[in-house]
Length: 299
Ligand SMILES: C[S@@+](CC[C@H](N)C(=O)[O-])C[C@H]1O[C@@H](n2cnc3c(N)ncnc32)[C@H](O)[C@@H]1O
Image 1 (cartoon, rainbow, N blue to C red):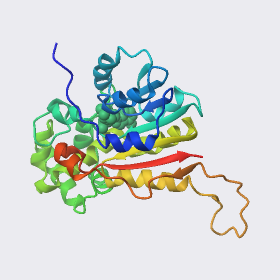
Image 2: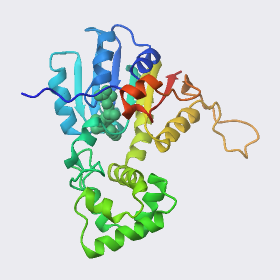
Image 3: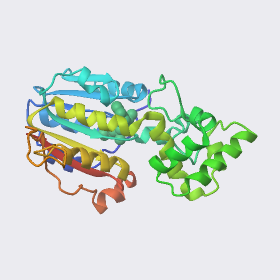
């Protein structure tokens, strides 16, 4: 049997230090991936601790299941982290990690359709039982809707031109593969953003993140900590704003002169600015270069 693929966990020591884990803790890894962070967290919480791991991708979960079978204190669940609350009770978890985005496996396996450099099916689904893939978006969505996702999820200023190029190409022949799509985009420097936009749309990633954060905070015990690693500014903005919103003492509308909302803040922010990987880490693992880590503590 071949050995499991290698994955280097990003910002590992920074995550472990800030989650303040101790022996016996209950920990959630909301984005298990190949279990790099989880294995290290298990070393700290020991056999008295409990680790619950989620991954939306059944293939990644299968690989992780093989890796963790010797740990009786690990429970692995194939589900989107936006549904975490359906599996665990409120105020029951000491620490939660969300290392969002794709795993190396997604980019290394061309057949998943995440790489614009290698030929693969235009898929991009994290969970392939999900009804629609990148192919349906690229070949079926209106020019306006394509433009919208390219602008909002890819932050492409020339989204109208890119959307037009895709429409022209698909009229000649439906786009089947990643390389068909890459050929339809004239400005090749925009390919990473085009693929990012599609991936976000296919997996509804930004809404899932927003809901996942809300679910995670409900699960935490008071004083429990959440660590979120994101890989682009759209995700980081959602995390930053979510943390900020939940530190507010008052949520009355601005026109109210006297506060009567009786709101109490849920979180304390631990990282005023996101933690970034060191030069050494980026050198060892270039995929870590855009990582941003934010931590908050439940009050
Ligand atoms: C960056 S990898 C995590 C790597 C992991 N920390 C490790 O050290 O091996 C992100 C993982 O989260 C999964 N994922 C992404 N979005 C998800 C979501 N909304 N719900 C559950 N899993 C998700 C992906 O399938 C992928 O396996």
